[in-house]
Image (cartoon, rainbow, N blue to C red):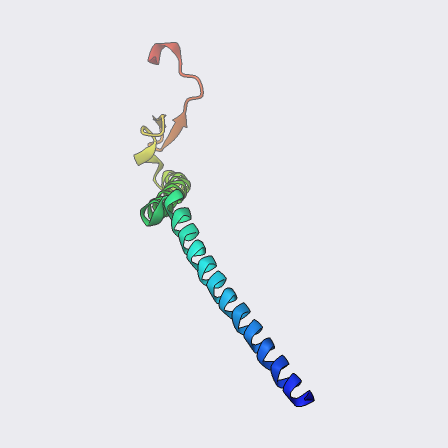
Length: 116
């Protein structure tokens, strides 16, 4: 009788666990479907692939432009220092000739009234 009761209890437990396992599998499938839909909706909300690519490209362009402006300014100053005769007029200066044949670049802070 104890053996029959034990077998009956095991069968009942397996039956209950089988039902729970089936319910868990169904719920897991529903959650996976909902997660997939949420992921797709979030992708649409944030613009999808092309918006992300455009944002990365725009960020690269801005960083590149800033780097180019920083490097160009330093390069121009270096070039002016090496070749002041060439860049003097473009930099707002004036080449001044000396009586001994030498010359220098004068940068006016405030130009005389006659030259304006």
